[in-house]
Image (cartoon, rainbow, N blue to C red; front, side, top):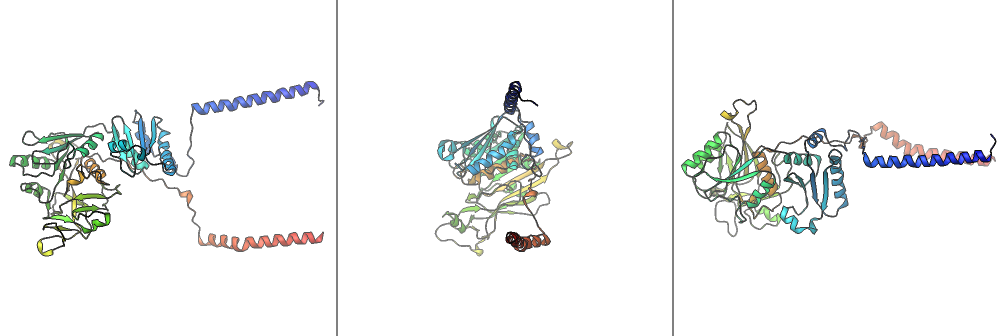
Length: 456
């Protein structure tokens, strides 16, 4: 082909057109990437994608979700949170994530009751949930609780010196009640002298009464239990006379004295009447708990064999605890001849049974009746609710008792391609190859190169 001025001009024009078209295509692809997002998870087992249960839950949530992480300036932790929340944002774009350094917002931390180690607050509609450890299991189940629409009424009994469900007194449960309301639960206080127990009561709370009930009130309470009502009984050492019918009905009895444990000095607590619980059983209430709980002046519980109730210990002291029946002053010691009981002691028990009543006679599945008895009410009071684990335990108990403990089972996605398991033959081949084979090859190559150069 003869090269002429015309052919050169055509080649230059073709190059120019190609360059312009190429740049236009790149620009068009860049613009399309801002309008459409496509992501693919090619990992083994799709371990970087949330489970089907989490995705179905997100499909039912039609309003924005706000996630606020109260964590310090730790990029590793923050990146882990971003990565997990990002897997949810792929399927729900109106999930927002905000980071706040708790050291720079002390007033907001106190207002929300954020733990000193940091927490993550999830908000949806007018409700909020707090979690301390972020995982798909924790985040999905927190979102599940926030989507619950049915009303749950938590009823506190009054009229016998019980701890008040409102107010800011040290003895009261006002802060705990506020937390319940933040979770979307309704809190109400009633007197059995004035009214009956409402039929829509999800949970009845008997919070440390200091005086006995009237016979008519006790009849109402026992009738509520007999019909399958759920109960949280916060007892105290030396509970007032008159609660024996309730204890007999449940098969739970308070041992004389106050539980003391000298090992609490290991945690910097000088008062031996403070019981510290560090380990928990495998129960729905405590399965996710990792922090310690503190119980000031607790009573030990003893359960009797009953065919009606299934009893499971929930809170158990260490072996060095005992029930002190004498005056707690000066040096104290365990006296086996003084009707004192040595540890380990149960200060919290769970009772369950199935009750068939008229309201569920046509149902195929009868709700399980649930009762929790704790030998101390101080752990939920305004004074001690700030201790690590106390609020978490209280909220877990209320959720479980009010049948608000449904969870989505999230199977942990393993990474089978990150572990290499070699047999003995393979290990031997690799060892011989690296220790003997490769040095021999290097030696032979050196000899060959030397021989070739010598021949020249």
